[in-house]
Length: 272
Ligand SMILES: C[S@@+](CC[C@H](N)C(=O)[O-])C[C@H]1O[C@@H](n2cnc3c(N)ncnc32)[C@H](O)[C@@H]1O
Image (tube, rainbow, N blue to C red; front, side, top):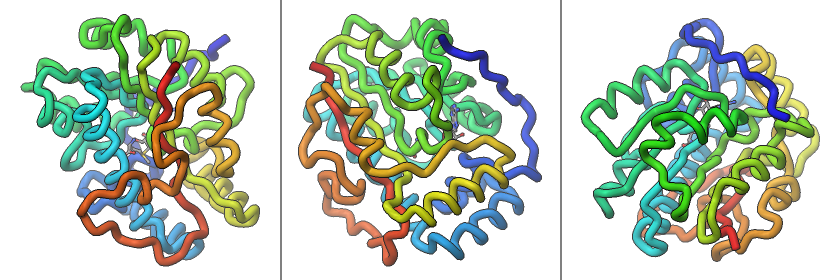
């Protein structure tokens, strides 16, 4: 059973959020001094995080391009979509296939404000303010119902988001993945990656640090084996589950992470 999620509608500039810290790492302007200070602290332990963030975003863009151009996907449901940057999911998909529809979901109120401003002119795209664990609420939302035809394949994205939610029998990543796949037809895709470390000290420190600075809006840094479990029963697209900068790299030169204390790990699974 899903638990009810409280959603904050107020922007608090003094409490860092994952969305705004990520925006800062990507060179965006939608963040505050508290977010930047938290990034600076984090960099002392995991100094490659800026490059990791840039590579993560590029992975997302390559995946959307691949699924649209090579696999004919025209519908995307993007959980934890983040603050709009350049080349967002709808811009890439609609740049290749203008009829593509995209529903963005995020629980950060700032994402909602900026997302809606960006999308005002776009009939085929919507932003929903919801917790990514609220599968029933997201799937039955009028905008989701308007834009997504669940009798056709959908690409469902959980890109760099599951580290934001804790383990829980009813609401942890495996439960969310199970619930979501029940709504999808074969030929649909799940895109999933998250922050992992094989170093227990790094996992513990960063999990504790992020939990503290975000005042509990955080989950857990996990291990590669945890991510692999979410893909059970799916066909995993080549090259498999990998550090994301190595997933079908294009011609753009990716900034190499100089240290590997933590990485963004995952891939793309197709429902059989
Ligand atoms: C690191 S960003 C990833 C953004 C984007 N998916 C990407 O890969 O570029 C994590 C995003 O997840 C969102 N998020 C965190 N917890 C969430 C939750 N429980 N429900 C919905 N969104 C959440 C944050 O607000 C943030 O925008």
